[in-house]
Length: 426
Image (cartoon, one colour):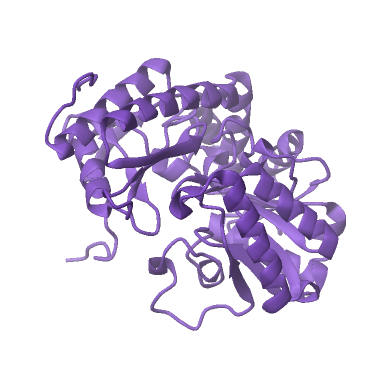
């Protein structure tokens, strides 16, 4: 009998029958409030009618029109629409299927455009699971262990993780920039450094917003040394943080931007964007792929961008994100096991720590499992696995956030063994 790989571990026991908006309906007959969204993918909610209609219509026209053989209208329209939201100057786009592929395309472009070999990444970053992308990932050894040798030319610098260091943000940023300067003096000379690669908010690394001052410090150093600055917006982009792009919480702009996940509401498509002059430095044959820019995925992406704009979902992400974080901070005040609550928009992380401040993965896991029992789907993340992450769809309502908070608190209370005074209950 054939089965799925035993290495694949589900975060929940739920088997989906159907889903709509913020809700997953299981084959067990229960409805679950989904604060995982396929790890930040179903941005417009499950099966948004506009996205479903666009995909159905496109399937009836052409499913696969390989984009280096023939061109199709959905990809042309998507490229035009991306131009309305991309940072100024990033006017050339290459499409792939997944975040990992887009990350690899970005570093390949950076190396070709600068004629330099090395890439600097930052501690806690997640950039994918393919060999090159895993070589760039420092969110945990599980992503890169066991299949060495990894890709050469990768150097890691400190991330300003203020809570972990026990510092304020300003001190953490100053330290991390100092460490980057030291890295450029001791390990990878600027003349050998092609790019800095960073997420505007760490994903698997713990749902940590990258401080604006750090982003701006990277931009200054990139300009000073002729280094390309790459923003991995795979998880933080497309309205997730309450701005269309996660980096827009700072004044820093990228030379290369990577997007995937929420761009097509669940259909597989990814892209990198760069200035035309830079993109033109890619070597002939270095960009391509059988399924890249698939016609159905592109049509779904066009519909996704229309829905985000017309339903004002970026603003909804900001407002509902504020509501979610405020509620989580109230819960934090009642439960000492919650050491930190942080995030931007609808990308919120709750870090569980022991009394001595060390990571408490056992409690985080118990809470994550407990939320499923309460009818709320959540995930964990962080190198130690001690962060519960909440990723509602951008269409989430005020009432659904309130329900999610009640169910989350009920799970925390159950793990803690008591419901404290003032709790909202389940």
